[in-house]
Image (tube, rainbow over all chains, first blue to last red; front, side):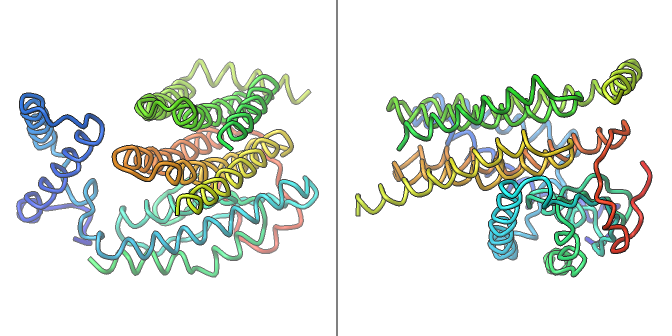
Length: 173
Length: 96
Length: 113
């Protein structure tokens, strides 16, 4: 699973679980948006979901990157920690908005990501972007270019707690 | 409280529109437009509660998706060669 | 119980409005595009989240709750993608950037686009 190129055997090992999870997600999405319990409409919905699953299978987009089910045990804890970080970062950015232009120090640096898979790198980059005050501008290989509103944000990122947590999340699979 | 929230979001949308008109570069305008769209989603949801019609939430959902697709579409257009030519000329003008 | 929910929803809406207004002021006040992006980030994450949570507490039953949750999730998934795409396009097109001069000693050199 750590390899980026999924071989044919691995794919046949993974696709039933991922197809099932995609089907459940699509059914929930259909039912929340329509909320019909009529038999005819329910069967039409089931038919459309099956059609989408067939198209996704033919397009070869069902894999462990589009449906990261192997992360689902570990991810709520990470999301809670990320929410706490987002709240703290929001308070800091709002403070600097009201303090004015003289209190900010915009910085552009390049840091290293220690994740091995593409999925881990994307989770890390998106977490950085989701936290106000830091935005991932570019991601080439292992290096990401980050723009920060205040210099202290870069220092906390370089201390590497978020990096460590994402790597842990990735290694649990 | 809902009325106050509606007014606050309308004020924020007004501020975003100001940045959209003033904005020196095209990217400021796209950014302000994106923010305007997000605030519109919030405004539609709050209006649904204010009027007692929860069906408005469907419209908000669709608006969020359309907003994202339109921003990505404009950015794809900004990758084209003719566009870069025009944009460099306009940034030179704004620096002078 | 009902009055508790009302008060909680009011507090959440008030906080969300304050955060959105701060973001709106920030987008007018900050000096260049990249810093304005951080101001928009405030309104997109916690501002929208607080307002939607306040609306959830208004009517905590059934399908409305699920739909609000879906709007919140979509907002949180869509906005980092859009702002990353914007920032990347701006960097590729060599947008003028205001940087703090005194911060060079701390970090690595930024990579050229």
